[in-house]
Amino acid sequence: MSNPQTQINSKKKFKFPTAFTILFFITIIAVGLTWIIPAGSYSKLSYDSKNNSFIVHSYNEKDQYLPATKETLDKLNIKIELNNFTEGKIRKPIAIPGSYRRVEQNPKGIMDITESMVHGTIEAADIMVFIFVLGGMIGVINKTGSFAAGLSALSKRSKGKEFSIVFMVSILMALGGTSCGIEEEAVAFYPILAPVFIAIGYDAIVTVGAIFLAASMGTAFSTINPFSVVIASNAAGIPFTEGIVFRTIGLVIGSISVIVYLYWYAKKVKANPEFSYTWDEREKFLATYQDNNNGKIPDFTLRRKLILFLFCVGFPIMIWGVMVGGWWFPTMAASFLTITIIIMFISKLNEEQIVSSFTEGASSLVGVSLIIGLARGVNIILEQGMVSDTILASLSELVAEMPASTFIIGQLFVFFILGLFVPSSSGLAVLAMPIMAPLADTVGIPRDIVVSAYNWGQYAMLFLAPTGLILVTLQMLYIPFNKWVRFVLPMILCLLTIASILLLIQVQLYT
Image (cartoon, rainbow, N blue to C red):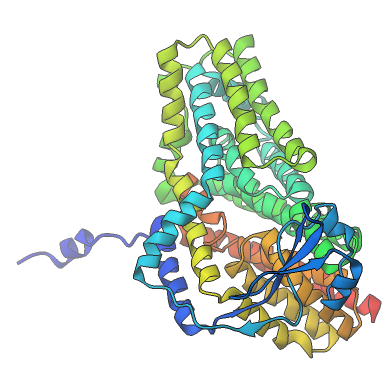
């Protein structure tokens, strides 16, 4: 007769599903929603720069061409300055207020699950190439021993003040988030900063906290971010500088909250490594990012210092390119590839070593890249199923008749929900702001308060939304989704609390 205790021990410990499994089931749920939620569509307005005209796209109707004038915008009840279209400030089609109508149901089927995965991956090709180039670059630099030598020098200098590194990274990421909306670009920082945090005694959660959490908090309280608050303000028909004071106050409070929370967690992990939320996954994390070098630390020579300098200089160039040069992922990938080629020439590695290290580095990020494509597939299902506009129309009707204070808190949670279905900040801005911003006029508050509610609500959801970038991050650092939820939930509640207080203060000031 078998021992009951042996039977208990033989049972496998439950493991939370991986990012791929989560996205697969979410895709199935998205297909189910296309059968349940009524299909509907807003007419969309876009600007044709070649013909200097507006184009109205309506579901199953022939496109309508209208003169690009203020009179046309007034006729469509779009309170946006004409120059926002003609100068390219608004490039995506925007929803026309009052144009929502039910359309024939377009439910998706079983074959659409796999097809959406394929098409989503194709749509994400530019981001995937960027990630592959970055991975190859990391592989080459690792082969030179530059990371190991630099980390050894850093760990010696930071002894006794390890958290100062977390503090500096968090501040820089928050500033990057508020100024240019670091999102996909943050993937670039994990391979270099994860070994740093390992070297000073921290875990994967501290790594993702200092990079993703800090950057997302900065993006939530965007001040001049052209991909969220600027485009949302343009779509609301106001200058982006309106409301910037309260967004700045939120940025300071939010950043302090992240740093204090990380300090509490990092101190606990430092005192007792088993406190780590990812203690069970530490071996995979260490095996991927810890550079053991067979116990031999290479000298931090001038050549290795130059290689690390070239690597680091790529990031401010990337940020400048995004903010000023209008770069997107192909250009960013090309800039990193250029730097990689320079590093190859000065590395003293032979041709075989260069090729193998580059391909190995790139191949290590294949899984991460595929997750981005699968997440895009979920969005494709919802768009083709015509349910996103229905959700927006229903939620806008829900908050339309509320008193000012209730209205703005309702807006915050409306955008929190919409962030799950439309994880793109610019996409949600042009879809929802022409509908939601005019509702502020009916309750007697400025439109910039609705812009703030959009930014704060959507990003509170994007800390969690599997359709966003969080699963990519977790996959890179071997963090199960349930353990991330445990860590980030206090920060989501903190963000929503800060946002609610600031929104209510603004409403009281203007009513």
